[in-house]
Image (cartoon, rainbow, N blue to C red; front, side):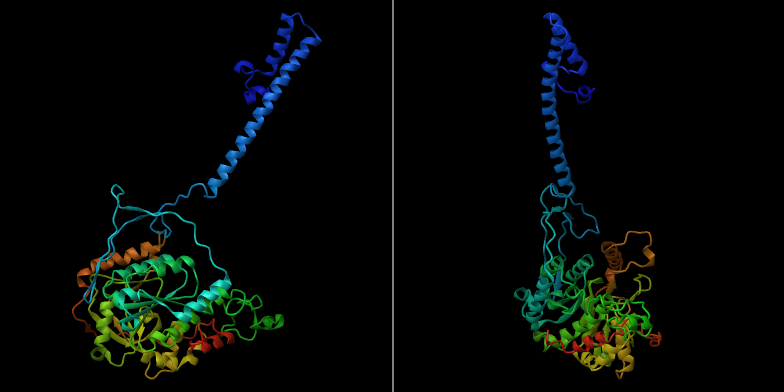
Length: 499
């Protein structure tokens, strides 16, 4: 039965079973006149021969099984073959469409780049797969951040001239969403005049792939700065989440009994700090301090700084519009301290006025996207730094609204574009329920709407229209910023030249 199951090859290539081997012994014994015990001995000899063959077969089968097992495990771990497929949401692609870069004409400069397509490749560029880069240690990241902020190198000055000659400064607050940042950078590249800009990427998380992407930009001057008190390099101590910190929802009496570190500093609602939330306000405040006061090569720059975030997207005429408002501000609204290029209004061809502007009091939830200030406005905000740093709200924009209404005189006013030039693609919202929502899909929605408006972009003139919108009242603080350590760290960053 065993031989039948294993299909063991016997003498002459025939399949010998237990019964056949026994029959062989009897037949041979009968032919040669051998019977009884001698016939049994012949049968045993046959069995020994087959047993040795069986052992060899079993060893071969065992070795074959082991080799197959190793190959299967190797394939499963992706070491034998590295297959990846491209989707519109996949940032790490092996196969990607090869598209020519946008043609930019700005101030006499014309930049055209083409991506040659190999014959027969059907517009597909094959990119060699590679292992993801290894992340450096926390100590190494700390050293990289310190050295980078001290030197604050400007990339691409050899292509576009010294940074002192820039017409625009754009600051992008970056966390970890590389897919969205790619879309923002693509929209930058399609905008005329971008070669006259300095784009500063302000990071609160060091990522090797993100860093490589930013440093690969070639269409404008680029600078990187890193928020030095980020949670990544202090995960288990302030400003990160110390294990001895009070839990968010613990009662103050219980917190005092347990003697957690910040038991005496809950917010106005009785909650304790969450490091991941407080970092956003810390980063925004440090960033704007550092750009205006901490970068030596920008100390004489007194013009406007445009503030963006990694999940924004800009129209092709965003710098054209920005430049028009800056040059004509005295005629449009001389006392306005802020320019707002973004809004949460949906683009609609029927009711859109790309050449219309409005003037109104700055209000955080309406005018926090694509806002720009100059050094004069910054100096007024910085003088109210204590109000910003001690206001019990972890949102930087609501804290700035508190500064505007309670400390600044007059409060902040802004020139607002009726048709937004800056868009938010990081939150798909309720209208995308049940649909695929990615950086690509959100950006494509904006691109489609901008194509519909293309004939109306780059208007020759803008006009002011009356706005009957009343500015809402200042709401109560949102909380999340009651910890005294956050107040102290925020105040410390008002002068960021010690970084």
